[in-house]
Image 1 (cartoon, one colour):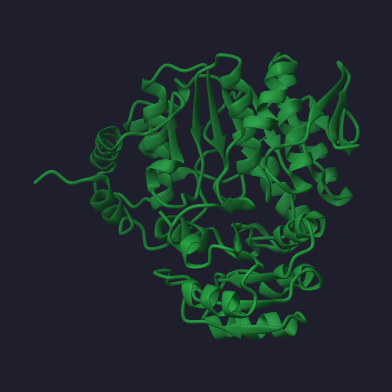
Image 2 (cartoon, rainbow, N blue to C red; image 1 turned 90 degrees about the horizontal axis):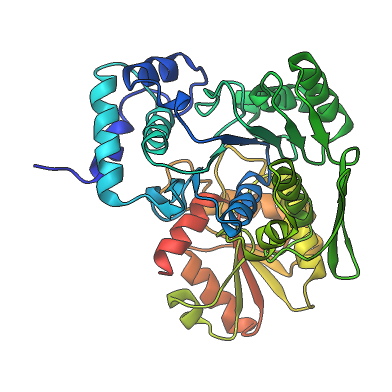
Length: 423
């Protein structure tokens, strides 16, 4: 009996005992068995960093597509459906195409051990190699140096968005160690665009770029971006751009827009492509306003938002966004994974919200129990309650604050569950 992609993906989860096991050996073996599709891709733009990778990629894609280019894009994790990870020539991959690629990779891999992310990345690269396009955008899954996407010898461009502390169990405990892992995508003589960094992180990236003879285009040195009087001002050695603000909300999107514009300029794109990049990009679960669906219908006067940020830098970005929004009682509905710095995420949010309802993430084995998340919120200085579900939390908030602002947050996995539930 023919299997759909869901069944194959489920089977792929059993091919390696660990979900994350950073090495490139298995990846190189499988790609060789597939005929080395990674060497046959349209020009690659490879993006690493702790925060802002997805938004930056979405803006670059919007800018390239507005100028008539056809673009492949690979991102992770997905929110509602796995197909979101792979865009072939601008369109989400179809079910028949995904199923065929996954099947082919399973056959090529045989009985050998391989992680879910490795084999699905190989499937994406195989699809990209076989489908004509002008560019390939690859987002790193975790880290950079040993990430399954880091198999491209000669990308057109690499990008490192802001680096902060996250995934210490895999990438190291200090910022220089983590920056070193991200800098692992830098390739010999390939230009690297660097977003805002801490001084110690930037020093590591600059040292690696110098060693690789990679021209560096760093924020604050080679390009500048800022908001001025409700406009985005970008300046580099080619001149100044005066553009509208990004349509993705939050002051942190200014720096993501800067990296995207720097990339587009390095690719020879004009001002209209740069404007399209920041005004037409779509990236779900990054301060996304929910306007339709069952959750909205439950509490029609609530202003409902969704965000998947989950580390302390993500908490700061959300806090900065809330600080600039019109004043309104604001509640969080928060679910988090047990691998995250929960108090570090919540502490910057505390001054901007009335309180928090904690939930467990449905269907996620690594979720923190709602009660643990509630206790962390109390420790961070928030008024906090535990709730059985997001809809229960929303009901409780709307009963007391019928016109509140509610932000569902804390994890991309929770965001994905909400996007599925809310249709």
